[in-house]
Length: 129
Image (cartoon, rainbow, N blue to C red):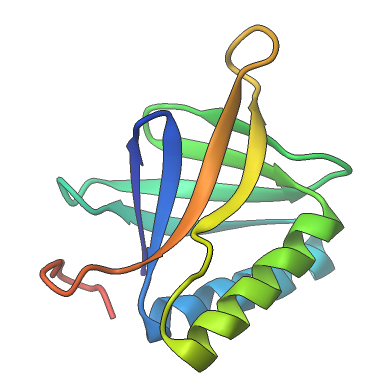
């Protein structure tokens, strides 16, 4: 299960080894299906949402109450694969910044920075690997 949080104007994804492997599998599905959804749990309150990924030429994000649509390019997917493989090899993300996405809900020039982070050791949720 993928953990997430929205704070400080950014979207944070938290991974352990198991969820990093799941997310790598998600990336493979995006490439073959051009869209894919995955469930995620908020790291603070345990609320579940759906992450829906779409292959596109640029990076856009649309956040709603129970769902986040993520439009992602092949270049960004390649970078995600690289960062996740490095995490699986080294056990940490450096740097934590992944990509800046255009906020489709706002008017113009609003971006949401997306980060990949290691799951804090004190975070435990049911059904989280």
